[in-house]
Length: 238
Ligand code: NAP
Image (tube, rainbow, N blue to C red):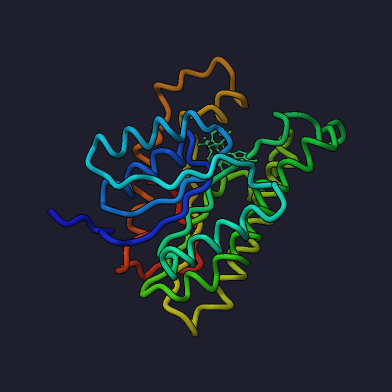
């Protein structure tokens, strides 16, 4: 039976576990060809085995750090050479910025990591992938945001500030292309989800009571489909 994304090409960051791995499985189950980025090579290889055992296409694995200079541009160039376009961009990789701490106490490296992964890597993805998404019949981009981006969240300083900047940047990009392209660009706010990042922030929490990554992946799918009409929105998981 034909999948909803047969022949579509997707790039997923933060694909090694948690929400990113679940979204990747969901897109693969619909027939997408997927380029998967994360640092943990073994986890990406296991995901590839799993996807192929389920009848999906072989993944293109990029086991590397999104902060590495030139990496994103190289991946975009390789996608152009192989497919001539990108149908779906999932900007999902995230860093918590060293855990919860008063804003005056964060280590500079933790601050830098949060902004490099949560904001700058996504800007570089937009910069490198905008032309490829425009070459697609129905380019789609979805970025994973957080409720921490809005309101006031003590002890979440670098994470909250970088996600707020992500939301501003993505909505700006969406507004710029609204009337001139077929692109549909959105953010998805998953709420609390049972992942490693959540366990670092809330050790001891019963993750069985939280939303599971597979449930969140279902909410990404409509935003990736050619028929998606939402644009420039922060879509809450429900
Ligand atoms: P997770 O299980 O810890 O996954 C984070 C992913 O990001 C991993 O695949 C990790 O891969 C990748 N990553 C981090 N730094 C990277 C880097 N420098 N280069 C390449 N990949 C990197 O956490 P998660 O909860 O699924 O997080 C996914 C997204 O959801 C994040 O943007 C997070 O902010 C957002 N979110 C999560 C929750 C929640 O409750 N879980 C709530 C709101 C928003 P490697 O370590 O293998 O590189």
